Amino acid sequence: MIEVKNVQPTAREYRMVTQGWGALHWVAVLPVVVFPIGFLVFGLLALGETGDRFPPALMFLAFGVTTVIWMIANALLRDVAVRAMRRSPTGREDWNWRIDADGVVFENALQSNRLDWRGVMAVREEKDRFLFLVTPGHNPVQPMRLLTPEQKTELRALIAEVTASGRMGAGV
Image 1 (tube, rainbow, N blue to C red):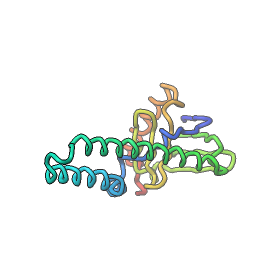
Image 2 (tube, rainbow, N blue to C red):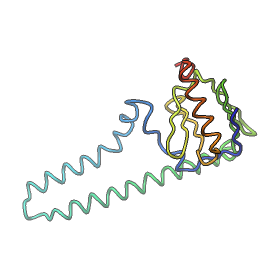
Image 3 (spheres, rainbow, N blue to C red):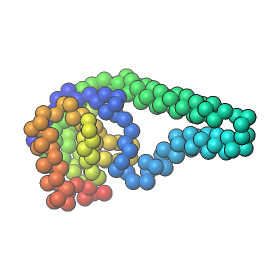
Image 4 (tube, rainbow, N blue to C red):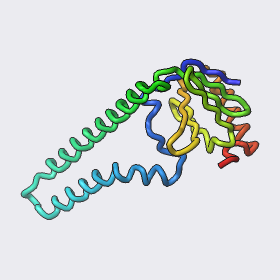
């Protein structure tokens, strides 16, 4: 059994899930990428039509400034969302995790959640977190920084075992 106490992921660890849910990710990012792509295409077409009257550097500068503002807005959104979550009664509490052959339990003083491995579609190991893919809107995060090297090894072995046995995602 792996036990991790006082789990409180950072805003960075709560970042958007970019892999694991197939086409859903790409459909979800369309509203985000349509504007920059349209801006770039329009700018390139405008450059072709105006010839020497429109300095190309101006269009690329405008695109660069827009991209930087977009990146700042995304970081702000992530930070504000985490602050709002931490203002909620259960969001202020640290979580305690227990991971074993039966599944995952994470709880705090106000809430308890139990996930059977059959209800977990997959576990993604990323550079700074383990991401438990449960539903597109609910993906518990276990930060790597809170795990000892032995716990990381044990968790990897457990994930491999439940995947090989067919229990991981069997309820999906």
